Structures are given as C-alpha cells and as structure tokens.
Length: 340
Length: 233
Image 1: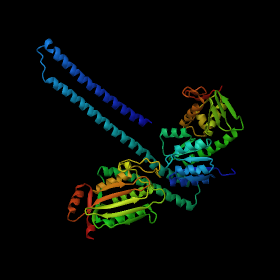
Image 2: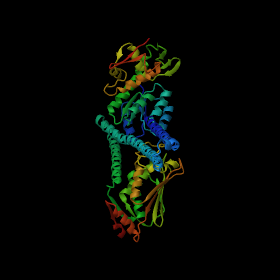
Image 3: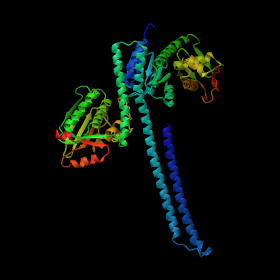
Image 4: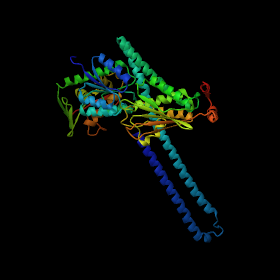
C-alpha cells in the first residue's frame, strides 16, 4: 500500500512539474510576443534612442533553450528516481527472502538442538536429526558463500583458475560431480551430442553454474523432473542446452530472470525458496568465461531451456582468448591438460 | 485426554516440519502435515482439526490466504502462525486475517509447545463458558456465546474463540479497568513481556464489530496508560 502511494506521489509530482513547466514556457512566449508588439508600436515614440536589435531574439531563444534543458533535466531526474525506486523494491524483496532463507535453517537447527537436549531421543532418530542439522548447516553455508562470492565477482576480487581443457570430458565430469552433490535421483538427466574442441573453463565456477541449473529445474518442476542436456559443437563456439520439464516461463520474464534479486512472482510456482541471486550468479560466471546464456520457454508448463555458449579455444587463434583472460587480474590459466 | 487432539501442520520446509512433527507427536498430539497451500486446503477440507500451525511463505496459497479461508469456514479454529517474517505489518496482517497467535522463527521449542497447549486449553475452556450466560446484549449488539454468532445493527457475523473469550472477560469485568498485562496473562496465558501489540489488534477487531464509530468507541474505551474498560448499557 505504502509503495503504490509513493509511486503515485512521484507520478503526480512529475505531472504537476511538467504542467508548471509548460505554463512557464507559455508565459515566456506570451510575455515576449506581447512585449515585442508593444515595443514595436510605441517603443519608437517613447524612447527613440532604444533600438530593436538581435539581442532580444537571443534572449528569447536562450530562454526557450533554458526551459527545454530544465524539462530534459527533470525527465532525467524522474527517470533515475524511478530506476532507484525499482532497485529499492527489489532490494526490499531480497531482504525479505534472504531473511526467510537464513531463518528457516537456523530455526530447524535450534529446534533439533533443543529437542536433543530436552528429550530422550532414540539412537536411530538421533542420527536422523544430526543429518537434518548438517543439511541445514550446509544450506546456510551455501547461502553465505553465494552472497560473498557474488560480491567478490562483482568487485573483480575473485580468483579464477581457468584450464584449457577438453570441453566434452570436462563438462561431463562437472555434471557428474553436480549429480553426486545434489543427490539427484537416477536417470533424472540425459546427455546427448558430443563436443570435440578445447575451451577455457574455471571448473569450480562452472560447477556452480551446473548446480544452479539443476537446482532450478528441481525447484520449478511439479513432480519428478527430467533434464535433457544437449552438447552442440560449432566452429567457433560450443553450446550446452539444459532443457527441463518444469513450469516454464512466460515470454516477458525470460530476460528478467538473470537480473540481480529478480524473482518471478508466479502463484503456481511449486516453491517460495530462493534469493533472486542464483541465475544472476550463473550469468556473471558465464560472462567471465566470455560466453553467453539465454533462456527460452514456450510458455507456462512447457518447460524451459537454458542455452550456454562458450568460445572454442584453438591453439592457432588461442592467443586471443589467452590474452583476454590473462589481461584479467587474479586469473590463472592452466594449460597442463593440453599436453596429457 | 481420551482422544488425541489433531493438529494440521502447514510447513514447506521439510527439515523443520520433521522436527515439529516429532515434538508434537511426543506431546501426545496427532499431527498431519501439508507441504504447501494447496495441500493444506485439501487436507483441511477432508479432516477435522483442533488446531492449525501455519507458515506464511508457502507455495500456491500463502498463510494469510489459508487463514482467511479457514476462518471463514470454521470461525472457532485456533490458528498459530509460525513464520520467518518479523515485520510489524506482517504480524498485524496475520492477526487481522484471523490468526490467534503469532510466533517468529527461530523460536524456542518450549514456547511453541506452551502456546499450542494454551490455545487448545482455551478452546476447551471456551466450551465450558457456554454453560453460563449464553446471550449477551449491549447497545445495538447481541452476542451468542454458544454459537459465537453476533449481530450489530442487524448485521450478522461470527467471533473467533479468542475474540469471544476476550469479550467474555470484558463482560465479566464490566466497568473495571483491565490492563494489557492482565489480558495477556488471563486471556492469552502469555508472558506480558512477549507481545503487547496482540491485545491492541484484538481490541481494534472488537471495536470494528461492535462500535458504531470504531475511532471514538463507546463500549470498549481506552484508558490512557492503564488499559481498557468495557462499558455496557
């Protein structure tokens, strides 16, 4: 309620300011024209020594230019204000979701600690509670890591360790590692296609990308999820497509989901968990690999496809990529896999 | 307790729900869990419960929507909201849509269990109240403490058990000043240090029901820095 009132107040102020400005412009023109007519009619008789010259035209044009500049400045200020308002709203939303994401695992850990200290819990149950506490502690750790690493990535303080590697082999390894870490059910994904080129990959960062894409597919699928990963080899780039059978995305949301703090407000979403940072982080990592990421979806309940493009590393043209990554501070390139 | 009291636990966080279910079961309650808003409404439609523990941030239908639907169907159902949201606006909204109590995460297990126990006890206590005076009238208002049905200038509505108990307390202490502390202790069975805003929200609700002009009340009057006073006819 308060937010919509603020927005309404800003729009009202903007409209009033524009109306005032138009009135001022009208008055300015009216004043000039009426003065000019009076001056032309009686000026010579009253004061013959004052002669009309070009300076008045200059004042007139100058005044109009000044008013137009003021108008543009006002529009610019209001535009910036609007952007700021949007950012504040997203930030508020982020604070609300992050509070939820921090407090939920913390309450659960506290609940188990109090349960274990006040009740006589059987050994089997006790083991189960320890596992649940570990799960929540890991969730908290992951959340903290993501916040800290995104901040480091934005401020270019993150160490990158790029490896020139066999794309097919490395990506399959990373996907398998994600499968283990997220404890995915068997046959929940397939990989088709083959890559036969080298590419520069920071394996840890790419692991985060794959983890996030899997995690998203799980969160936004009703019932059992199925992911089809497709590798495509092109001359200058490799493409990794990540298709799920989830709830999909309307067209107008497809670009926005990579924005920082952005979360799709969908009543039919099977989850409320999330911080609006995951896909932003994914995009930043792919950008740091000089790659691109898009999402396509035919609409709600028709699944989504995330498409990652990474540049191919060629020994002849490899210099270009090597130079690019070497230019980046805090980046190392490991080429040992080339000679294995 | 011959029959186990039944609690509907609506919580989307698996780890928290497992721990809560364990503790409530250990206390002798029968617990049925719903993972999201849709499931909660489905289960609620097919079962009878003594109490609902409700998270706010839930998929499909949030806790506020569920509380409003439940309250509309069963005005006497005790609802305890359990949530990570701490903003005053959320607490007020929760209590306004019909929650009887509000606990923020992270919470102490003992506090949660005491509140659940207190809410269930009040539900039973309320049943005993019915045997006393069933219908009470003041001004243009009539309250039937048996059915919780009320009328104000011909408009009919229903009170929640909490509202009814509070009203009953005021009626029993007619023309006496009752402090917030006393209300929290006697009506809510809560530590007055915990939450005083709850009382104000419930008073606002009662005024909306029974006063011609809730902003200048004639029946439930605020006594500055003392509390409230109920003035009947």
